Image (cartoon, rainbow, N blue to C red):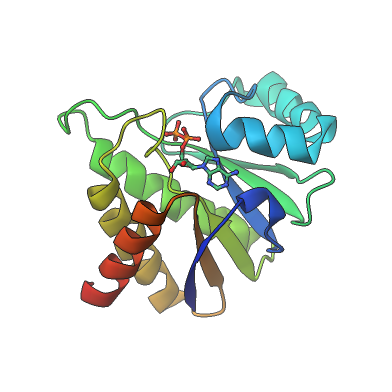
Amino acid sequence: MIAVIRGDITKVHADAIVNAANSSLLGGGGVDGAIHRAGGPEILEDCRKIIARQGGCKTGKAVITTAGRLPAKYVIHTVGPVWNGGSTNERDRLKDCYHNSLALALANDCRSIAFPNISTGIYGYPKEEAAIIAVGTVKDFLSDHPVLEVIFVSFDDASEQLLRAALKTD
Ligand code: ADP
């Protein structure tokens, strides 16, 4: 099942919420900053353990931590591509973000996962194309794993409408 809502992802009661992180995993602006602020220091402590083990997270990959004091059980941190005009495999990397986050949620027995609009803020990915990729990748995954519930959480009206349109036409 796929739902589209507008709001603050830090308030969503899903088994996992996804963070649009950067490769340092040390926090940043946008949704990343909001998640660390609302979830508290435990999330960064887990991130530091991952950094010690594997040195951050590459674009398109995903890692999982506690959600600290957020209502979710886990935060899945994925690193979206920086938009560079479309010539540096941004589309494939954005697909990877959704696919790897969904796979990691399943591997951790999650039944519900909430996504922000990865890469469409500071990283500058065109919102319409990002919405089409998000919906397409999630639909593909759910056709094999229908047990997962996916919630797209948009912060702004335009992103919400683009996701709804992509869901209708896909
Ligand atoms: P990126 O660096 O991947 O572009 P950003 O955090 O800058 O990540 O933006 C990703 C999307 O998350 C943007 O559409 C932004 O409006 C949205 N966003 C920012 N804060 C929140 C929040 N608290 N809940 C949900 N979405 C958010």
